[in-house]
Amino acid sequence: MAEAGTIGQPAGRLGRWLAIAAAAALAACSTVVPRGPVESPEQRPVRSQANRPAPAVEPGLPRDTQRNRVALLVPLSGSNAGVGRSIANATMLAVLDTGTDKVRITNYDTATGAAAAAQRAIQEGAQLILGPLLADDVRAVAPVAHAAGVPVLSFSNDTTLGGNGTYLMGYVPSQSIARVVAYARGRGVTSFAGLVPNGLYGERASTAFLRSVEGAGGQVVSLQTYSRTSGGVQAAVTRLAAKAPYGAVLIADGGPTAAAAAPLVRRGAGADTRILGTELWNSESGIAARPGLSGAWFASVGNTLYRQYATKYRARYGAAPYRLSSLGYDAVLLTVRIARDWPVGRPFPESRLRDSDGFAGIDGAFRFGRDGVAERALEVQEIRDGTTVTVSPAPTGFGG
Image (cartoon, rainbow, N blue to C red; front, side, top):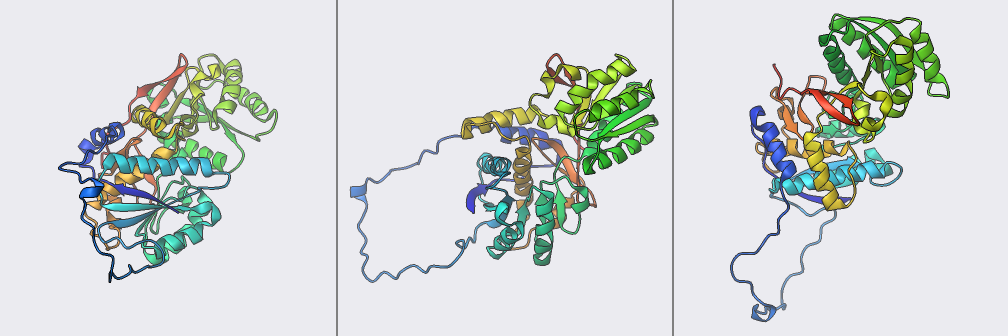
């Protein structure tokens, strides 16, 4: 457990969010210079220690009558410690950038037991939980938090976990797929095909893909599954080629698999076949350097503010952040905004999380639906000449 310090003033309404988030991300660290005279040690009066009562010692964290307590639950040890510490660093950076004293954030390690970490956080006064990161940890934490009336603002994207006081900030595959399909349809693509891996992610991607194409007025010509074994995706591409032609193919997998499959798809269906990707691509720093994906489209949160945040992160911590760490930064910005209407010592005003105007941060605008899942304003990017280019900007807010 470690203290993460204090966080600052809430943001304004939707029209000002992105400017405010940008200002927070770009805020420069400064040195605080004390004002007025500074006493040297010999100038300070000596106070008698006699008859002074000993201070009372209480177990746990010290009481804080000026700030509300927020717990950050992430893995700080074990195999996922890297991403967990990156999220913790991001929350600290947001604390420094916002700079007020409305809230105190304390870190708890979920690697030693997520439920136990939640219980300890609540016992020590936490009225809001940021995290956990992993779906299994959310399952363990949610009932503990719900019993105590403490909302959970998780970084998971498992939509089955949302609701009943649990909110999900993770990037949801179905939203990314729907956005890129709609963009492709708007560019004249009417027939689609898909390559999806076996397993839970593939199942959810398949469902989202079929619904998205139908909703956009297109047609799915073929949808092939594959195992992540040697030759698995190549065999699926061969089956897919038998159903050609089609205007675009969704490859619902990470960059390495997509880059290997894309040339085979174009060889069998035609060089003009458009490759579509998912939100997985945005978490891979080298995705644009893969020549097989040149011309591909994928939808994700924007990277403009993230790049500025990453520069500040490197300057402070001496290493690049994990892409998911922006969720921790934006969770702090959200908490800061709501803290304006959160009296110290009172329960967290959970109803504010369902603000229809939503919130904003370095990942853009988002709002929570009735299911507790974050709906995000996504942009469409194209891989071009070794970089990514935004071809359809994210909306700055929501229509209703």
